[in-house]
Image 1 (cartoon, rainbow, N blue to C red):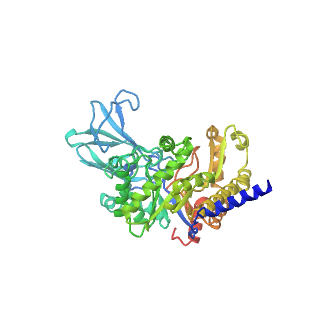
Image 2 (cartoon, helix red, strand yellow):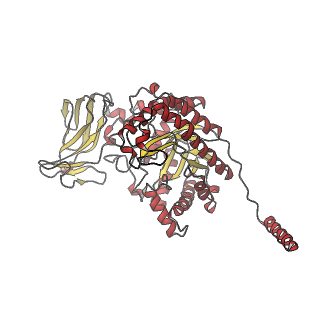
Image 3 (cartoon, rainbow, N blue to C red):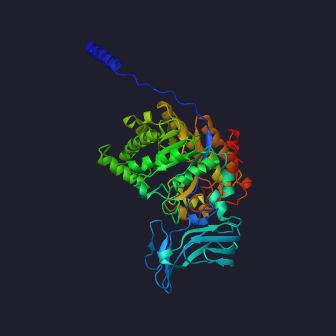
Length: 520
């Protein structure tokens, strides 16, 4: 028996010796840098990136005199979303700058349009009116306002509406569509992640003809056009992180890559990612990839199907970009994964050698405090009674160390496959979930914690850990957005905030400055 065991041991050793030894690529040298996720297009967007706020208008609402709100007949729209005809006793309207507290500019706003018709604003004093032009003095106090299309001539219907902030002209917008304050705030960031700008989550885009265009009535339907994404990256001298829609066909990807090659400054790189958080069951892209992964025989379980399809489709997308760019020098090919479970990263990177076709593993290691209504460890009603200091003590002793462990775990996986570790989203993640979001006292506490001076020290420890553990690009989520029960994501809440009073913003910019980035 002993001899048999020795023989088997010898045979095993010989077989193992005959197997090819995997070649591990040396992990690339990390160059930590700050990037930013920009808040998506919406009439409630508090960052106000465009001088022309009509770019962020809501899809037209049909109204009929004497009927309830939004009860007008279906509007006849052209392919870009402009109203071609109004039924008798009907009008169309859309809200703009739905921002409370006077956090958008007061003064003389200019409304311009092409075609024949009549436009009114629901707020302000008319200064002057002429065909195709209306000037209205608006006081931002009391919230937003509506633009109402009262009349339009079907044979020359109203289109190309622009609603310009005080102090700007059509000539100014033709030179640059971006607010100078918006450009100044983010000048010096290493990369702009356009996930929300592109309306990536739950996207309906499949064909290249589905893409958003500069002549769309609003960018809130399909996202901001790629041409403007690249224009912004060029103006800020930042890399562009683009997210391809989960159902985009090869032609869509190919045309997007061609446009990127043509429009993005040659000194700038394109980070290329398949959709966003395909592993996350909250999004339609997760179900789509999971179901398709199972149908293709990649896995029996939908979640594994989503992981493997992410890897497979990503590699296909990378190949299309490489062909159009004529190589990989200006590309950062991103394979995304779930930060809290490094096992997922191993499944994605290892599927059909996907990592060999990529440059980076991307995670979102948030400082996470998800507080449900009826949680076993943390419950909304209990946490809501805590002081801000007690809450932040828990963050420093529990949530922050957990986030740092996620970084370290995923860095090991990235090293194993010779990839950079990058962060597609980062920052605090203090939010009520599973009913906890409806606890007003909890929301009040979480917002107070976000504004507390101690958050600066917490963020500094967070960034230091990212740097010490070998992290590369880190894109904070997000730029500027109003805090609510759904989360306090913005580094700032409003475009006119005093940035010096924000612990999160100052910690973030000081870290970028330490890294040598020319941020303000």
